[in-house]
Length: 176
Image 1 (cartoon, rainbow, N blue to C red):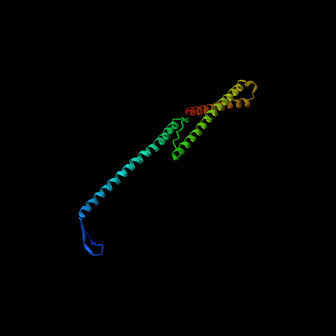
Image 2 (image 1 turned 180 degrees about the horizontal axis):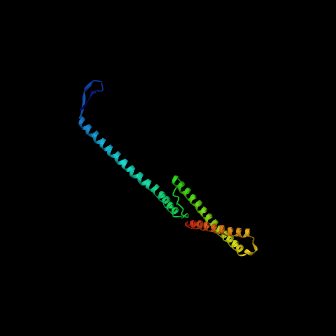
Image 3 (image 1 turned 45 degrees about the horizontal axis):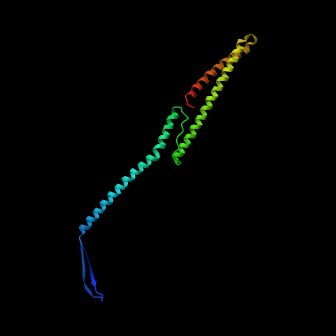
């Protein structure tokens, strides 16, 4: 235990007696042990609450934007370039969503341009093939060299038409 002793001094400076105080160390050790357990429990509760709170905040802040980006990826995989990712914030995920939308718009414009170009090429190849057919039909007025050139032109126009048809069927897979 602990024993504290102090003199009791009168106004004249004389010692009138002694003050004696005894403390049991087992009592203080029990109190200290209880305080340590309480501190440990409060610390553990704070850590668990912090983890739970961080999880809730992360789920609210990250889950929706990531889910939207995953959905947009599925749309693009299916060939749909019209889907726009909602932008929920202006942080890194918001910037990623904006960049994704910009990329999607570029792809949409690119495939529209391909589709438009293939349509124009289709019309042009049909025109070339029909003009070559007309030349072949009018064989009598053509030299052998001109007939061969007209046949070659007709064959090339038909081959070009088949290639354009393949391009067109590819571009039709995309929902623009």
